[in-house]
Length: 526
Image (cartoon, rainbow, N blue to C red; front, side):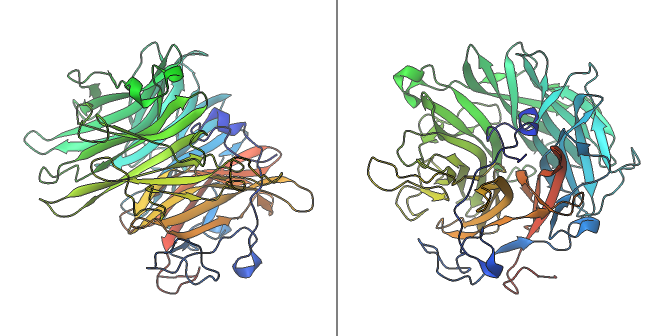
């Protein structure tokens, strides 16, 4: 069996059961690696990939990986092994420890779990549990279906998770832990009778007296087949209680009919995440909030979408068209583009600042799905200089299948899936997911962890490589995928996903990538 996401935006129970993979075109790389692509020398923008390898801006951190020393990527042990171990998100604490959040089966029920590793990738026991993991189970015994986000803010760990209520009804929870692994509270972020799903978390702090920490919860709600973003805000009324801000409530954001074709109206938009710019602590650096997702244009044709909202969840009309921007990336503008992540950065000074917004996801390329990245300016317009083709987008991998209206496809090729979203590390955009491929001799379906970097300014590909993870359980290379990534204050990228251990079982996968700018190889030691 082999691992892949059954749907790029679905992480959880569906991912546990998704085991097929497809193939990637092979190209020669350093050390004879047939799954590596050429990189572009650091500091040079180029439209095409160079013929020779010269420099990698990122490399797996060989110091991370615990006892297995699996090149910066490895399985998390300590009981988290079985048919239902799904790692989804990770974050780095101030002391360098890496916390990974996901789902694990316990007594036949999917529960939320936090695992902790040291800066060297060795398991660390939580003081609250005496073990390397802390588990949260729903008091009513119901399954969690997805972990949608994990964030660290002001000394607390916040997990956003989608919880099953009935076969057709889902709720969204925010589960908060302290840094010892104690659960502080479970906050029901939505809890209506509609089918709901988590999207992302954001935070800010009211700096006037009294100081108040606000938690922004973004998700989606599906009613009568129509999906729309939902915005809510909560604050702490004490040390253990989160309460919804009733002045905001559960704000369902409507998508005007102009954003989809007549046959798809009223319009639907699914949510992939939320990002902010500006300091959440300083009033002198105003914070902006961007929600990313996909708008259904017509039939199975979905396009990337971003919106800017206020702290009360209202659309900022100066961004895009009435606060929303839709962008088609695929080769024929009729295929499926599914956003998996959104990131933004603040540029300029205190008085002349502006934002740049980046969207990444899976795009249809006629034959093979690829990774599409879009860059939007402060007002929501596409940055024409990004990607080199004047559209504001760049596409990695996949295949247009020849030219003209007749695709020329090769059976057995595969996809690059950016399931891990997108982050910003210095001047690079980082993406992670899975590269799917077939073996040449047996035509077996396989998948490897994919990690790539793209220059945030010009969109040129800086690095895109797959990494084969060796299972500590079997001693052989196994299928793997990354569902989430986070960038710490030092620019290091922590990733979370799954490793197939054999016999259809899954284990948590955790890893770290570091900037490799000193020696230009994979063995940087400082």
